[in-house]
Image 1 (tube, rainbow, N blue to C red):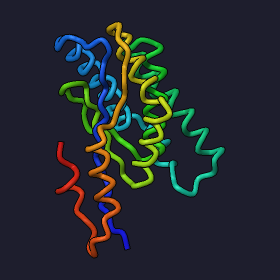
Image 2 (image 1 turned 30 degrees about the vertical axis):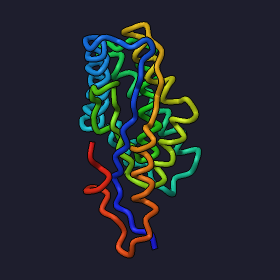
Image 3 (image 1 turned 135 degrees about the horizontal axis):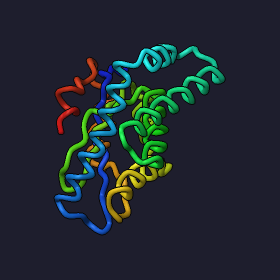
Image 4 (image 1 turned 60 degrees about the vertical axis):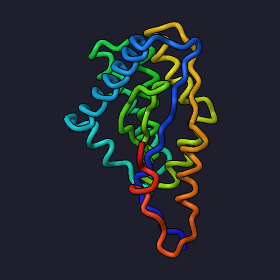
Length: 189
């Protein structure tokens, strides 16, 4: 029997080519935090958005899910544009955030390290799998490229370091009788 805690934190690294100055990386990190703040505020204060998110149940029909996703995307994009975010950045970030909400994924923080690191939190094992699909399909690369290229001329590589991901997989696939406590073993930055 596999027992695993939920809320699995997965760092995703954004490496720029050519490398950027610390100041440029700081500006990008701050802009990404701003995007995230606008969405988080909307999710707390907008009765329309709160109602839409509450309707996202596991047993919802595909048609209803798509309708809710489209309405959320419109609300997110509108809020981002009202906050002065460029149209293309608002569009791709709205799509990104709808995708992660629907799949029980959130963003914990955006930090600077040897690159910019976006810390996602996956509320289920299935969500961790979906995050992996978003990375390997190039979806996250397209999203973060739009954000970064709006501020600087640089290509973006989106990667999950093998050690980061493998540690989470090891925790999730462990056959120790009681499971592992991910918050102690795997959720450190």
